[in-house]
Length: 246
Length: 310
Image (cartoon, chains in turn orange, brown):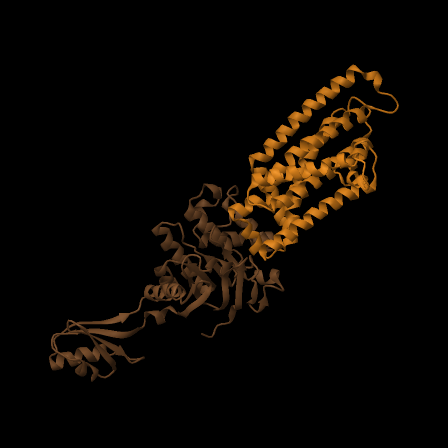
């Protein structure tokens, strides 16, 4: 109940700010540009579509791969305000003095952000789905890719929420969460090094688990990885807010 | 005073690293009381109020709101509180209606109850004409009112106000003060301020905090009582004045002025005037030496500095 109240308010505040619309517009513009490019490419070399790579794989897979990079850039912008701005303007006090628990505050904020993620996901989904009338899409494959995009957005969002709870400057929160996400993303590189335990870094990397989903392979381990990642950062945010009070 | 105890804080302390912001503070708020928290800047007023509102955990001590521990059952205890921090906790991008509706929702009100609560709260704080405007476009005074409306929307028995009139123009200050007095009739209020006349005008009890300690805690009416009378006579003497009923020790201050200590509970002014007229002392001045809140404040808060410096 409290979580929903906070989430609804958060979603409303996200969408009354021009930032959300600007982000949606820019993401759509860039992905649309990439999509058209892929489409032209595919139409030119239609013969490369064989029994292993179909249009769903080519269009969907490549588009979603590119989408994660764009999301890495824009999600910190969406999460930076969540706690940092509230702390700066003093409105965080409203939540802290209201009869709601810290967990409810964090979950409410995340759920509000999740609403925005769904809107973004809807726009991303529409592009490959616009091909439906013209060709035979593998909806399972597209669905797995979209699920991957959503999971990666959740992970980015949770990490961004945590960084936002650390500071009172939204811009610092944005830079900080971008840095954190890129670092976890790039930990993949370490796994190519030759030292004992190097493969652990590959397993921890944000992007490694995305590859399978993008290719349409639904592995519950990957899904659990993202859910755990999200839960970990939400939990850290609650701890951080509790620490602030003491 | 016999009202039900709404807030009870015992041995409250708060540290910020090595700095002790509040130390060993005791506070009791009863039903129907308006307490003024007074203190120089940095005395620990805001810290105290933040702890009472549950936004800051005390380093030591215990707070009970209506007998419910704020530490053990924060959610339940907070339902009895309304808090307006120094900066009104508003979202500039929301309209007054949207914001108040959200605040009512945070306090667990149902949709039907929310509309009535919002209307009532807007009425009380004079926000009706601003209802549809964005809070960010309102003046500071109106934002303050929105903050106040937020604090009373769930009709809490206790309202905590941190410097509610700061940054307002004189008219707005008067309006907010009148509003606080009105709220005081149905709620208990704690407010902090460093404006002395404000406390005198609004509160029933004053608590002065200096360097995190409580140094004064008396009803405002007591501060208005007087303990000596100054008399100026053309012809008279110490001995004559001392013989007047109700007069205590008499000291001569010079230029025919005398300070007559008052035996507590009596008012010798009338007797002095009568005696002076009857015996032809040539009375030309007679006034009660009232200790103002300002004098008490200066005495208590600067005295600390002197002691520390010594």
